[in-house]
Length: 143
Image 1 (cartoon, rainbow, N blue to C red):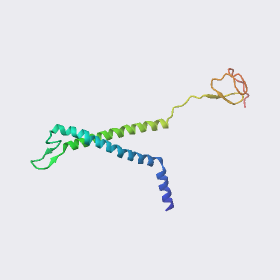
Image 2: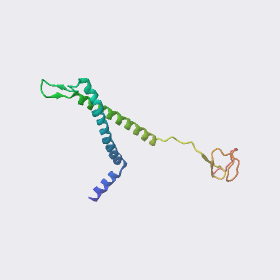
Image 3: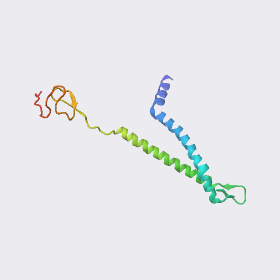
Image 4: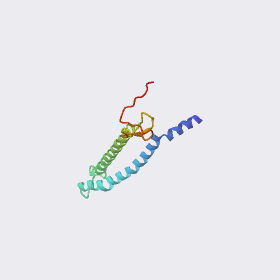
């Protein structure tokens, strides 16, 4: 039983699970914003197309039953907005992950003095430690 809880603790402590939890919470909050946009702004505009009496609905066979095409179009627009935002978020996250995996190589700013083996600036022409002239190639003994 201890091994089970240890594995569960390891699973929960991984960054992917926490990122997923944050994503679900933010997605839920954003979903309510998009739903409010479609229900309170877009659907009333669609209802104006059908006229004041119909309000985005089609009456079926002179009964009290309606096909609410305004709500259906609103749901489609809601889905499209959410899909677009999720696509943009995934694309941005993939780009960041790609940058993190393949960072740009930075040009070196230092070099090693061939005489005293100290680290010096790359554009130095004289070593600040042993004062050797670095414009000439040193003749080092072969080992």
